[in-house]
Length: 410
Image 1: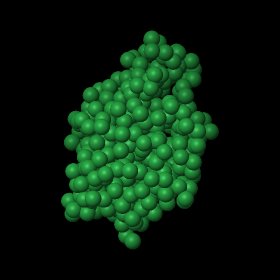
Image 2: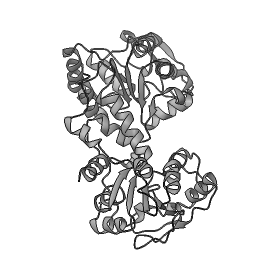
Image 3: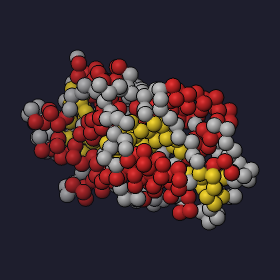
Image 4: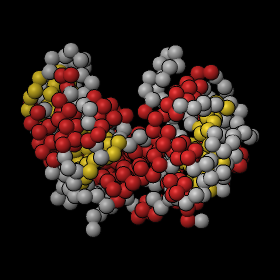
């Protein structure tokens, strides 16, 4: 049996009630359904939505509830509002408009909703930015109980907030008559289980980013379980330094060399490895137009910046990804936004797309790379939650899973 990455409690935390099952069982008709979605979409200076993927992703749950004969309430956070201070720029009005267009029906927006919502069977209303409510972020019990009284069924369908215990994500699930996982949350749960609970081997994890310190817990957790741990970006520079290589003036964290060596040793003790780049792409300045030079990792000069892995390293990693059974990807391996320094990330992305492995990817920069190279349809699962995805990789039980599992077991 494949060895799980998860701690023993996480498998139990995956036993949730699914909203889809309630609909199939006929338990939703005539019920007041409260959906916590993630509609936190990017907007331009005028407030216009620039990318609506999250809105589109929320629609299946809404339609599921309407088709089952429910009266539907929907809410989300947007931006970083100050609790108790209403500002027009914090409004979900642009979201309501886009949702109405996509669903082909009016989706009214209600501002003051905590003390009561008038919605009839077959209708859907959008409730204003939940983070404007005083007590939301601290999971105030009085606020959570008021929210719970609005509905018969609470549906958590916002994986991007699953790592936060707030009134509209955790408190309402605690006090609602029934609490369950929506289709998006359930899909994330299934993908995570497939990738981490019983992975097909070899299991390869790619963890990249600017700093080891921000992902040290993840690296340590993965080092105990994966067959290969690929590091990239500034993280790789720190590991190169730990391996005795010079990195010039590249971004690194010299004070964490012992931690990096500990991860290397943990992998080595299990007969696994953290591949150290054999060649790199360097520049003298951090700029899109800076001349790029490919050189051996042992030949980095004092005034060099390492901005990508070299073609030899990229090909070696690609070959290993092609032989993988499961791939977990978090972070590009170079400055892929600059054409001269994108080849490493592009090679990795194309290898993941071509591999027969089950792949799960998450994190904002990772999603940007996936979009840039057009491989969305070839990645097994693309996680919608940045912080939540990282906490899962750390082996943590997310608050959303914990409370929904507890309610399901009650």
